[in-house]
Image 1 (spheres, rainbow, N blue to C red):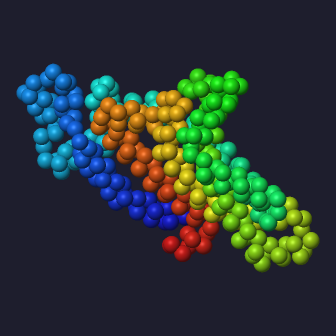
Image 2 (tube, helix red, strand yellow; image 1 turned 90 degrees about the horizontal axis):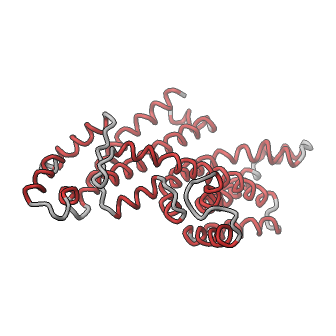
Image 3 (cartoon, rainbow, N blue to C red; image 1 turned 90 degrees about the vertical axis):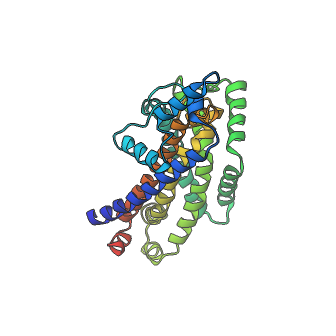
Length: 308
Protein backbone atom coordinates (compact mmCIF):
# COMPACT_ATOMS: atom_id res chain seq x y z
CA UNK A 1 0.00 0.00 0.00
CA UNK A 2 2.88 2.37 0.75
CA UNK A 3 4.35 1.93 -2.72
CA UNK A 4 0.95 2.48 -4.32
CA UNK A 5 0.42 5.70 -2.33
CA UNK A 6 3.93 6.94 -3.17
CA UNK A 7 3.36 6.39 -6.89
CA UNK A 8 0.14 8.40 -6.79
CA UNK A 9 1.72 11.16 -4.70
CA UNK A 10 4.68 11.56 -7.05
CA UNK A 11 2.29 11.78 -9.99
CA UNK A 12 0.56 14.77 -8.40
CA UNK A 13 3.70 16.95 -8.22
CA UNK A 14 4.04 17.74 -11.97
CA UNK A 15 0.28 18.25 -12.17
CA UNK A 16 0.40 20.85 -9.41
CA UNK A 17 3.22 22.61 -11.26
CA UNK A 18 1.17 22.76 -14.46
CA UNK A 19 -1.86 24.06 -12.55
CA UNK A 20 0.20 26.81 -10.91
CA UNK A 21 1.52 27.93 -14.31
CA UNK A 22 -1.95 27.96 -15.88
CA UNK A 23 -3.49 29.91 -12.99
CA UNK A 24 -0.63 32.42 -13.04
CA UNK A 25 -0.94 32.95 -16.80
CA UNK A 26 -4.73 33.24 -16.59
CA UNK A 27 -4.52 36.00 -13.99
CA UNK A 28 -2.05 37.95 -16.12
CA UNK A 29 -4.37 37.71 -19.13
CA UNK A 30 -7.20 39.46 -17.28
CA UNK A 31 -7.61 43.03 -18.57
CA UNK A 32 -6.61 45.79 -16.15
CA UNK A 33 -3.56 47.13 -14.37
CA UNK A 34 -3.16 46.04 -10.72
CA UNK A 35 -0.76 48.93 -10.10
CA UNK A 36 -3.34 51.47 -11.26
CA UNK A 37 -5.97 49.76 -9.11
CA UNK A 38 -3.79 50.05 -6.00
CA UNK A 39 -2.74 53.62 -6.75
CA UNK A 40 -6.27 54.91 -7.23
CA UNK A 41 -7.88 57.14 -9.83
CA UNK A 42 -6.06 60.32 -8.80
CA UNK A 43 -2.55 58.80 -8.91
CA UNK A 44 0.10 60.22 -11.20
CA UNK A 45 2.02 58.17 -13.75
CA UNK A 46 5.12 58.26 -11.55
CA UNK A 47 3.16 56.89 -8.59
CA UNK A 48 1.69 54.11 -10.72
CA UNK A 49 5.12 53.15 -12.05
CA UNK A 50 6.50 53.14 -8.50
CA UNK A 51 3.77 50.76 -7.34
CA UNK A 52 4.34 48.59 -10.40
CA UNK A 53 8.02 48.32 -9.46
CA UNK A 54 7.12 47.63 -5.83
CA UNK A 55 4.79 44.80 -6.86
CA UNK A 56 7.37 43.40 -9.29
CA UNK A 57 5.08 43.89 -12.29
CA UNK A 58 7.90 45.45 -14.31
CA UNK A 59 9.83 42.17 -14.30
CA UNK A 60 9.61 39.58 -17.11
CA UNK A 61 6.69 37.20 -16.69
CA UNK A 62 8.86 34.18 -15.93
CA UNK A 63 10.64 36.08 -13.15
CA UNK A 64 7.29 37.15 -11.70
CA UNK A 65 6.19 33.49 -11.66
CA UNK A 66 9.26 32.19 -9.83
CA UNK A 67 9.10 35.13 -7.43
CA UNK A 68 5.46 34.29 -6.70
CA UNK A 69 6.17 30.56 -6.28
CA UNK A 70 9.09 31.30 -3.96
CA UNK A 71 6.81 33.30 -1.69
CA UNK A 72 4.06 30.70 -2.03
CA UNK A 73 6.32 27.87 -0.86
CA UNK A 74 7.00 29.92 2.28
CA UNK A 75 3.28 30.36 2.90
CA UNK A 76 3.12 33.93 1.61
CA UNK A 77 0.16 34.44 -0.73
CA UNK A 78 0.65 38.18 -0.91
CA UNK A 79 -1.70 40.96 0.16
CA UNK A 80 -5.10 41.97 -1.10
CA UNK A 81 -4.97 44.84 -3.58
CA UNK A 82 -8.26 46.12 -2.21
CA UNK A 83 -7.88 45.89 1.56
CA UNK A 84 -4.14 45.34 2.02
CA UNK A 85 -4.81 42.37 4.31
CA UNK A 86 -2.74 39.18 3.95
CA UNK A 87 -4.49 36.85 1.51
CA UNK A 88 -3.78 33.83 3.73
CA UNK A 89 -5.67 35.45 6.61
CA UNK A 90 -8.60 36.24 4.34
CA UNK A 91 -8.76 32.64 3.13
CA UNK A 92 -8.62 31.20 6.64
CA UNK A 93 -11.40 33.48 7.86
CA UNK A 94 -13.65 32.32 4.99
CA UNK A 95 -12.67 28.64 4.94
CA UNK A 96 -14.82 27.28 7.78
CA UNK A 97 -18.27 28.32 6.44
CA UNK A 98 -17.43 26.74 3.08
CA UNK A 99 -16.20 23.50 4.67
CA UNK A 100 -19.29 23.21 6.89
CA UNK A 101 -21.58 23.82 3.92
CA UNK A 102 -19.69 21.33 1.76
CA UNK A 103 -19.62 18.51 4.32
CA UNK A 104 -23.30 18.96 5.19
CA UNK A 105 -24.27 18.95 1.51
CA UNK A 106 -22.23 15.86 0.69
CA UNK A 107 -23.36 14.08 3.87
CA UNK A 108 -27.09 14.27 3.26
CA UNK A 109 -26.66 13.80 -0.50
CA UNK A 110 -24.67 10.60 0.06
CA UNK A 111 -27.15 9.14 2.55
CA UNK A 112 -30.31 9.99 0.60
CA UNK A 113 -28.73 9.21 -2.76
CA UNK A 114 -27.62 5.74 -1.63
CA UNK A 115 -31.03 5.08 -0.10
CA UNK A 116 -32.92 6.08 -3.24
CA UNK A 117 -30.53 4.18 -5.49
CA UNK A 118 -30.69 1.01 -3.40
CA UNK A 119 -34.48 1.04 -3.08
CA UNK A 120 -34.84 1.70 -6.81
CA UNK A 121 -32.48 -1.16 -7.71
CA UNK A 122 -34.21 -3.65 -5.40
CA UNK A 123 -37.62 -2.61 -6.76
CA UNK A 124 -36.62 -2.29 -10.40
CA UNK A 125 -39.46 -1.36 -12.79
CA UNK A 126 -41.90 -0.91 -9.91
CA UNK A 127 -43.37 2.24 -8.42
CA UNK A 128 -40.54 2.84 -5.87
CA UNK A 129 -38.09 2.76 -8.78
CA UNK A 130 -40.16 5.23 -10.80
CA UNK A 131 -40.56 7.61 -7.86
CA UNK A 132 -36.87 7.43 -7.00
CA UNK A 133 -35.67 8.08 -10.54
CA UNK A 134 -38.22 10.89 -11.01
CA UNK A 135 -36.79 12.50 -7.87
CA UNK A 136 -33.25 12.06 -9.18
CA UNK A 137 -34.05 13.53 -12.59
CA UNK A 138 -35.81 16.48 -10.96
CA UNK A 139 -32.80 17.19 -8.75
CA UNK A 140 -30.47 17.25 -11.74
CA UNK A 141 -32.80 19.32 -13.94
CA UNK A 142 -33.66 22.14 -11.50
CA UNK A 143 -31.11 25.00 -11.57
CA UNK A 144 -29.42 25.48 -8.22
CA UNK A 145 -29.97 29.23 -7.99
CA UNK A 146 -33.71 28.79 -8.73
CA UNK A 147 -34.03 26.04 -6.12
CA UNK A 148 -32.30 28.26 -3.57
CA UNK A 149 -34.63 31.17 -4.25
CA UNK A 150 -37.69 28.90 -3.99
CA UNK A 151 -36.51 27.46 -0.67
CA UNK A 152 -35.90 30.98 0.69
CA UNK A 153 -39.36 32.12 -0.42
CA UNK A 154 -41.17 29.13 1.12
CA UNK A 155 -39.23 28.28 4.28
CA UNK A 156 -37.75 31.68 5.16
CA UNK A 157 -40.15 34.35 3.90
CA UNK A 158 -43.49 32.52 4.12
CA UNK A 159 -42.97 30.08 7.01
CA UNK A 160 -40.13 31.82 8.82
CA UNK A 161 -38.46 28.54 9.79
CA UNK A 162 -34.95 29.41 8.60
CA UNK A 163 -32.89 32.60 8.12
CA UNK A 164 -32.74 34.08 4.63
CA UNK A 165 -28.94 34.29 4.75
CA UNK A 166 -25.81 34.63 6.82
CA UNK A 167 -24.32 32.12 9.26
CA UNK A 168 -25.78 33.24 12.57
CA UNK A 169 -26.73 29.70 13.71
CA UNK A 170 -26.80 26.08 12.57
CA UNK A 171 -30.17 26.75 10.92
CA UNK A 172 -28.41 29.05 8.47
CA UNK A 173 -26.78 26.04 6.78
CA UNK A 174 -29.94 23.94 6.25
CA UNK A 175 -31.34 25.58 3.11
CA UNK A 176 -27.92 26.21 1.49
CA UNK A 177 -26.87 22.59 2.04
CA UNK A 178 -30.14 21.35 0.52
CA UNK A 179 -29.58 23.59 -2.49
CA UNK A 180 -25.95 22.62 -2.97
CA UNK A 181 -26.47 18.90 -2.39
CA UNK A 182 -29.59 18.39 -4.54
CA UNK A 183 -27.72 17.80 -7.78
CA UNK A 184 -25.12 15.57 -6.11
CA UNK A 185 -27.86 13.51 -4.42
CA UNK A 186 -29.55 12.95 -7.77
CA UNK A 187 -26.31 11.90 -9.44
CA UNK A 188 -25.42 9.51 -6.60
CA UNK A 189 -28.93 8.03 -6.67
CA UNK A 190 -28.73 7.21 -10.36
CA UNK A 191 -25.14 5.98 -10.13
CA UNK A 192 -25.77 3.79 -7.06
CA UNK A 193 -28.86 2.29 -8.74
CA UNK A 194 -26.83 1.40 -11.83
CA UNK A 195 -24.00 -0.02 -9.73
CA UNK A 196 -26.40 -2.02 -7.56
CA UNK A 197 -28.15 -3.53 -10.58
CA UNK A 198 -24.80 -4.55 -12.04
CA UNK A 199 -23.66 -6.08 -8.74
CA UNK A 200 -26.92 -7.97 -8.19
CA UNK A 201 -26.35 -9.84 -11.46
CA UNK A 202 -23.14 -11.37 -10.11
CA UNK A 203 -22.93 -15.10 -9.39
CA UNK A 204 -22.23 -14.68 -5.66
CA UNK A 205 -25.52 -12.81 -5.24
CA UNK A 206 -27.43 -15.69 -6.83
CA UNK A 207 -25.44 -18.12 -4.69
CA UNK A 208 -26.37 -16.27 -1.52
CA UNK A 209 -30.03 -16.32 -2.42
CA UNK A 210 -29.91 -20.01 -3.30
CA UNK A 211 -28.46 -20.73 0.15
CA UNK A 212 -31.51 -19.17 1.73
CA UNK A 213 -29.97 -15.90 2.94
CA UNK A 214 -32.49 -13.22 3.73
CA UNK A 215 -32.86 -10.51 1.09
CA UNK A 216 -31.78 -7.87 3.61
CA UNK A 217 -28.47 -9.70 4.15
CA UNK A 218 -27.91 -10.24 0.43
CA UNK A 219 -28.57 -6.60 -0.42
CA UNK A 220 -27.00 -4.89 2.59
CA UNK A 221 -23.95 -7.04 3.28
CA UNK A 222 -23.01 -8.16 -0.22
CA UNK A 223 -24.59 -6.13 -3.02
CA UNK A 224 -24.45 -2.69 -1.39
CA UNK A 225 -20.98 -3.20 0.05
CA UNK A 226 -19.45 -4.07 -3.32
CA UNK A 227 -21.37 -1.30 -5.07
CA UNK A 228 -19.87 1.26 -2.70
CA UNK A 229 -16.49 1.01 -4.43
CA UNK A 230 -17.74 2.91 -7.47
CA UNK A 231 -20.06 5.17 -5.47
CA UNK A 232 -17.20 6.31 -3.22
CA UNK A 233 -15.24 7.33 -6.31
CA UNK A 234 -18.09 9.47 -7.62
CA UNK A 235 -18.79 10.96 -4.17
CA UNK A 236 -15.15 11.91 -3.71
CA UNK A 237 -14.96 13.62 -7.07
CA UNK A 238 -18.20 15.48 -6.36
CA UNK A 239 -16.72 16.74 -3.08
CA UNK A 240 -14.16 18.64 -5.13
CA UNK A 241 -16.91 20.12 -7.29
CA UNK A 242 -18.89 21.10 -4.19
CA UNK A 243 -16.05 23.23 -2.85
CA UNK A 244 -15.82 25.09 -6.13
CA UNK A 245 -19.57 25.05 -6.77
CA UNK A 246 -20.33 26.81 -3.51
CA UNK A 247 -19.88 30.14 -5.33
CA UNK A 248 -23.50 30.32 -6.46
CA UNK A 249 -25.00 29.06 -3.19
CA UNK A 250 -22.91 31.35 -1.01
CA UNK A 251 -23.94 34.29 -3.17
CA UNK A 252 -27.67 33.46 -3.03
CA UNK A 253 -27.66 32.86 0.74
CA UNK A 254 -25.10 35.58 1.61
CA UNK A 255 -22.71 33.10 3.25
CA UNK A 256 -19.25 34.62 3.93
CA UNK A 257 -17.29 31.70 2.48
CA UNK A 258 -14.63 31.20 -0.16
CA UNK A 259 -17.15 31.28 -3.00
CA UNK A 260 -18.52 34.64 -1.93
CA UNK A 261 -14.96 35.92 -1.52
CA UNK A 262 -14.20 34.92 -5.11
CA UNK A 263 -17.25 36.79 -6.42
CA UNK A 264 -16.36 39.91 -4.44
CA UNK A 265 -12.73 39.73 -5.57
CA UNK A 266 -13.72 39.45 -9.22
CA UNK A 267 -16.05 42.43 -8.84
CA UNK A 268 -13.22 44.58 -7.43
CA UNK A 269 -10.50 43.01 -9.63
CA UNK A 270 -8.52 41.91 -6.59
CA UNK A 271 -6.06 39.85 -8.62
CA UNK A 272 -3.98 38.45 -5.76
CA UNK A 273 -7.05 37.05 -4.01
CA UNK A 274 -8.47 35.65 -7.26
CA UNK A 275 -5.16 33.93 -8.03
CA UNK A 276 -4.95 32.41 -4.54
CA UNK A 277 -8.54 31.15 -4.67
CA UNK A 278 -8.20 29.60 -8.12
CA UNK A 279 -4.98 27.90 -7.07
CA UNK A 280 -6.63 26.68 -3.87
CA UNK A 281 -9.67 25.26 -5.68
CA UNK A 282 -7.51 23.54 -8.30
CA UNK A 283 -5.12 22.11 -5.70
CA UNK A 284 -7.85 20.76 -3.44
CA UNK A 285 -9.54 19.13 -6.43
CA UNK A 286 -6.30 17.39 -7.39
CA UNK A 287 -5.64 16.26 -3.81
CA UNK A 288 -9.19 14.97 -3.41
CA UNK A 289 -8.75 12.96 -6.60
CA UNK A 290 -5.55 11.56 -5.11
CA UNK A 291 -7.32 10.57 -1.89
CA UNK A 292 -10.17 8.97 -3.84
CA UNK A 293 -7.68 7.08 -5.99
CA UNK A 294 -5.91 5.74 -2.91
CA UNK A 295 -9.21 4.89 -1.23
CA UNK A 296 -10.28 3.05 -4.35
CA UNK A 297 -7.09 1.02 -4.09
CA UNK A 298 -7.89 0.18 -0.46
CA UNK A 299 -11.45 -0.90 -1.28
CA UNK A 300 -10.42 -2.78 -4.42
CA UNK A 301 -7.02 -4.49 -3.93
CA UNK A 302 -7.04 -5.69 -7.55
CA UNK A 303 -6.51 -2.11 -8.72
CA UNK A 304 -3.69 -1.58 -6.24
CA UNK A 305 -1.85 -4.74 -7.17
CA UNK A 306 -2.30 -4.14 -10.89
CA UNK A 307 -0.79 -0.65 -10.54
CA UNK A 308 2.11 -1.99 -8.50
